[in-house]
Length: 77
Image (cartoon, rainbow, N blue to C red):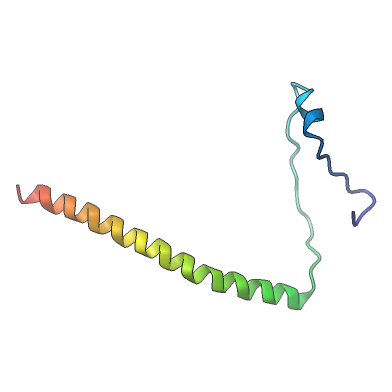
């Protein structure tokens, strides 16, 4: 642990014993990361987004083609 005030409860059996147990809300207030590590991370994120966009575009075009064909087929009958 980095801070002495950080507590992480990983005991799943303990959580199951309490029927009124509710998940705690977590709020991230700070991320300590060196600048150049963040730059490298953002470059990798940008590069990973390119194939993801291409895959989504192919799925979108295929869906438009299928639905366009169905609608065109109904209009000709």
